[in-house]
Amino acid sequence: MKRIKAIYPGSFDPPTNGHLDLIERGSKIFDELVVAILRNPEKDPLFSVADRRRMLEAMTADYANVSVDTFDGLTVDYALRVDAQALLRGIRAISDYEYELQMALMNRKLQPALETVFMMPAEKYSYLSSRLVREVAQLGGAIAGLVPDLVAQKVREKMDVAHKFEKHVEIDEPSPEKIPSESTSRPRKKKA
Ligand code: PNS
Picture 1 (cartoon, protein in one colour):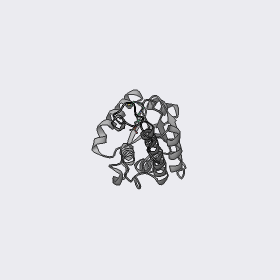
Picture 2: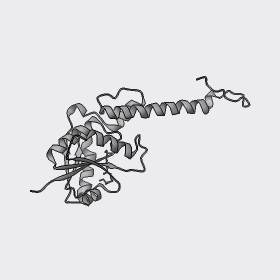
Picture 3: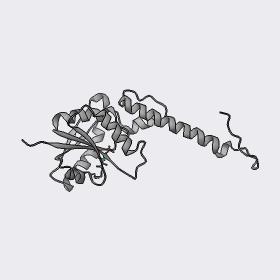
Picture 4: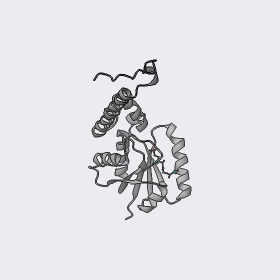
């Protein structure tokens, strides 16, 4: 019997409960599912690819037919390399459809044998995206319930480091408006 292997490509920065929901659904209909993290040197990610891989591996540890990998270049070339017949993508709302359709048709043009399969995550995740999780966390909002606990913990650690770094910069390099007008006076260090 033919076994169907699918890839689920994406940035996953960070992986969310919406991604996990889709992975779970995908693992039920495909014999094998590879979560494939794009290594994109042009982006300025919150998490390194290695961090994202570790998080996704921990999140998917209970799914025997799910593995995690990284790739660069064209998604269709990666799919060919790993012998996948299908490409899984999630559609949360109608706003996703245009971009996803465009991508699916371009991928079909490049590699006609590879089928894109769209699945819908649970509606409670329909508003959820990695970009919004990053933004909410960076502005001090709560992300519990939006990402798995282990991801929330990692995001918190990142934010703590970023916060400490910002404080450090503020102490060592005060912004121009904080520098006293007398050009000879040196900025004083803040008390801890
Ligand atoms: O999670 P994202 O950022 O929406 O994922 C987008 C992704 C990685 C699936 C897409 O950018 C992609 O496939 N990039 C690899 C380069 C490629 O194949 N480009 C042509 C797509 S039509």
